[in-house]
Image 1: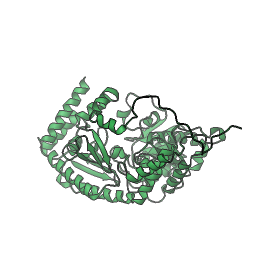
Image 2: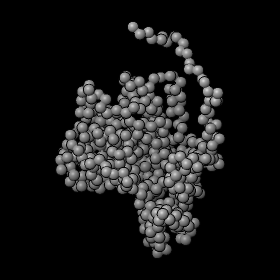
Image 3: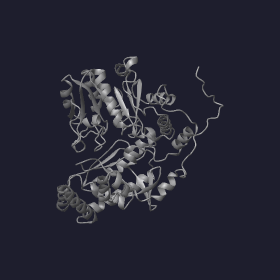
Image 4: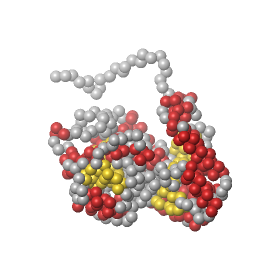
Length: 484
């Protein structure tokens, strides 16, 4: 028999051999504060550094709390991008931090692998409770893209079919499989060939979907209930009808809720806005699931799908990932769900989304460039379009001639520079500014944004003016870069 040390025995610690003092991460960060972009230019991504400097986003942030960031100079910013939606609970949420500190202090095991971890079982049970339909099994991933890869594998294995249908302008991640179902060529250029039998159709087009499904080779239809690129919202009934078509043709209906899930749209899943009867075969979650503290995602599916994949003991780990079910990530997930419930943040997302959306829509009669405001909870898109007056038409045409993705920067740049509000352009070659505020957004912060955006619109409708000087400069720099 092998002797095992009892709990009461002292375990001798390893001896420290280095004379160097232990790492002080806070002191290290302070020592190098402001060096961010030099370090990235040398070691990580010089092209991105150029981009950020060109549009004036080369700020160095040193502190974060809730919906706010502070830069190295001490200036405060309202973050309405929230890490592409990762910080749905705001940054450094105190309750999640408390739980994670307790976890670290408890010396709990993680990633033993030859066991069934407790916390992942508890988190899976909590996620299942929040689904609008019966989804029996959960697989934990490290990201939304990995969740999409999982869903593609599951769909092919469960149906025995090769094809995956996705939508134009879709964004499902940038790993090879996920990139194969990406609806934007700007992300795909240079990385082919992609997975075979991945076919693209227009979003919100049932006839196009059925035309693909009748071919009989479709394993699954992968769709975002609100498209992240452009904040495109489907017509009422589209998702339910798409679900029914998938059932009719024995294909899986796969709901990608990586950005729209976890309460962002005013319901736990955005697909719930379709009303009773929503019944996805697979749901993919990530982003806010850990409150931004650690990468984690989840794929929920029906039992029969799971049993096709993990069909025997010899296939019990046929799909796996080294860091899947890490206890620290599972603790973060449990903490995020607890905060979401106790602070009633899903209802706040619905309320504040309507407040922002209606406030923006009320501005439209005054500002020619504002074409449409779309929102579902705190997922908001402000689309610009060609103006009617001659002078502004000249400005619009000039800007789009320089660069088709340039025009929305006329709003994004002054929102940051003058008003210290972080937003983004919602995709390549589209005239949409996107907001993904944290679900803790208050009316005070919403009012500040609306007032600031109104000021930016006033300036954009003056031509010539400061906004156009900035865009002309950036456009000419972009043309110079492309000519090199």
